[in-house]
Length: 266
Image 1 (cartoon, rainbow, N blue to C red):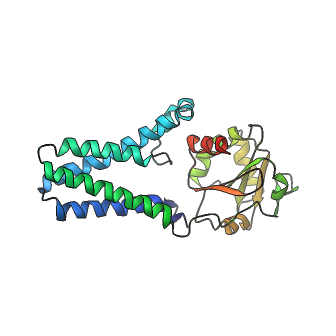
Image 2 (cartoon, rainbow, N blue to C red):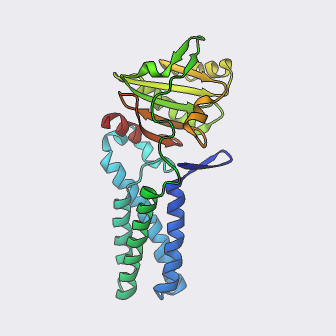
């Protein structure tokens, strides 16, 4: 499991771990640093802000071309796009400044920040709560396209295949559809958007209204793919390499930088 669904809201496991580690850091600081409540609150709140800003700007710098094409995506903070090392460097810089007049608490706060960051990295890497690839290769499964013709997913092997599960009632799904339609024009890339559980007319109406065109818009009225992928919610996206093996998976809204990184890597 790589995300938890709370009603219509998906919370990724790494973000859940991050919240837990932040609370652990706050508790350890309260017990060990000997700071007054106002000083501790100012340092901790600033540290969170510094980490978020540093991690975001570091990720943007590392994927500059993708963000240059859509600068407003930088402000879409709910999307993936944070680099932990840059966030840690920003947090340590803030700690050094905020506690500069108290050497021992400053050193202790830096040590706790590094320790908790290392714990988060270990949790994400080694304890992903069953995350991974439940569906390891393109399935031998035929789904109908909008013309009622069966399309077997295994027949797409040879291209990079991005399989996206979506629905018209899902706001994150709709926000990423133009990005997926743009990627579908790339040579050697097949974008397969598989609608989950909705009627043909509803799907056709949405695609026509938004002027979106895909080579493989498919219908999955019984949500077979959602079960095969063990998806906790929508949208769910899986990248299959040219040999048909699953190599990347994301639950939640994709960012342009993340999708570009996937397609360029393989």
